[in-house]
Image 1 (cartoon, rainbow, N blue to C red):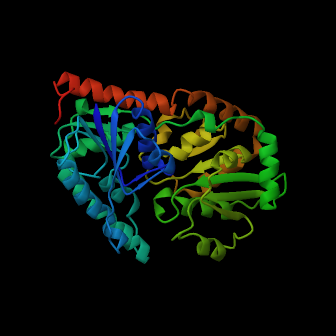
Image 2 (cartoon, rainbow, N blue to C red):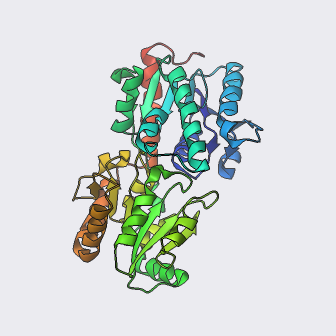
Length: 385
């Protein structure tokens, strides 16, 4: 098949971009793959079996980049003939396969309930509103196949009138080879030594976008403030560019207990060196970092508003908390897990076992099955559309 994969970024960073990165690698071995993207990972660029169509928005205002990208891709895709046009959400018009990793209208309802006092909050509000309009334009008119990364997204698609039989549920995958269990003790010692921390420190890890409130980091910080135990440290992994939390941590007097790691290429080692992973998201279609932490054998504490909570059996391979804004409750759960080492070990061990079936290759195969099933059924397979 001649396949067009469309996403603004296709590289080994972030959930959506990593999803398309693995699809491109897998499909390049058996199909004619074309990528429509702004930025592509170097490994993919060197792949001779992949054709790259560079889409550069050239917009000085970041807010409008995705909309110019949408227009340029939609125009360029019309010039080619593809059996499959698979887009990341609203990346282009005219797709016959749409992967939904986030529904902006649902995100807006969950996150923007409070007063938008900061300029960055207003920016994200406008950005989300504009994307919500694109969703209405594309999702309500499109009657082709949707891929949802969680039941949460599957249900949210119903608000656009998308019938259930047009939606395929495929959870995010993880490269299990990257998250091995070897040398955890040495990794832990190296991490504490590098950060200048006591070996007895209880290390909590948070990883995610630091430019917006949707990840719920505000409430995790408040919980750390509420825990009067100096051995409890919070490590925060994420790009520090435009982050909104460093100044807040200083104002809260948490400078000695909260450590900003920045963007980390060695995140698998960070997972292995920590005691607990906490993901207090107010909204997340899935939350790739959750399954990465589980693959590392790290016990996870996850908000019910993250799609990844669907693969967790509460108390067996992780812990789900109902209200990420309940700081008192979150503090109590963290302290309870700190005190119960055997429970943490059991949760981590079960977490690793439970995600073995969510390998990236299995995910790519499921996506490929969607391609074959949908278009052979409708007589499109083998034809250009």
